[in-house]
Image: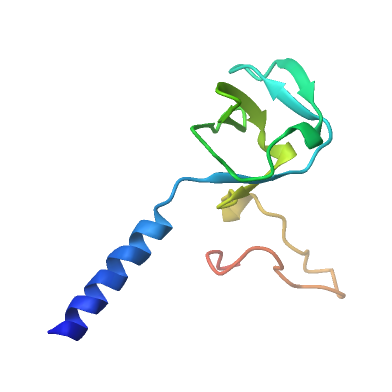
Length: 120
């Protein structure tokens, strides 16, 4: 009974950890562009002025590739190109649109980068 309870508790704790919201782990650009919700530049902030601890992502705009975080009590938007996010974004490409090697290509007939989901 104790083992079952511990297993259940460990499973719930693992699921709670995996369900944590995404965070900004690091700033890759210097200076970092602060944007509005439409992606227009508002100002630039030097990386040394930004906090070193991770920032929780409040919102994510998939169309514009922007994330909203709270910085000094103010909600701002940042470009994901300037950031290292955890978990990172995984881009899914349809297999039909990925290029393949031609039959005449004698050097490389591989499908490197397609992944296990593509049966090409």
